[in-house]
Length: 253
Image (cartoon, rainbow, N blue to C red):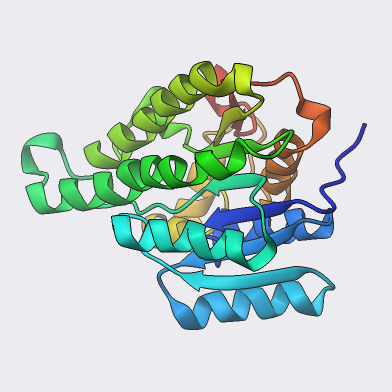
């Protein structure tokens, strides 16, 4: 099995923290040159410095994926930096209003979540795909959620956006599979991220969430990052249009 990504260029949105950062680190360890993108300049520069300190090649480009001009400039600069683009990881996302019912959900918050999570994924694909099609073995991995498969009470906009990501993943896999571009999604369960800290504050809540999982624990970020790397590698060369849950078995209950 070959996970080697040497010579490839990967763009990771929301790549400065959480799952995105773990993915960026893992991709760099396998030899990819990584473009980390996010809205916070200071956090992004810290992430890139960490990757470089461990021997990886990385740059940070500040961008808001909900803004067309930002995304177009992001992809253009990424290609200008290293002359190609092989991998797109659409990870940027926000949770919106947690645990708010549909009738009480604000229109402003709905629009914000859909703009970042779903429109942002589409915009990045729209502008990256022409460059990805130029590279043999190019891949897209869109980060959804177990909430994008089964729904829940985290907030209607979040779940709708994550369901939408699965839809656009399947559409793109069908549209571009014959052209050599593979498009897949990952549906993570619970992992220790800034978003999780905001949603499940306190040890008792963390323990309660762990007990809902067949493995009775939270996932490690390297476990989901490893899955992302595999999907980007030639070892997953016949995997296309698939949603891979990395959730300790949560969805099979």
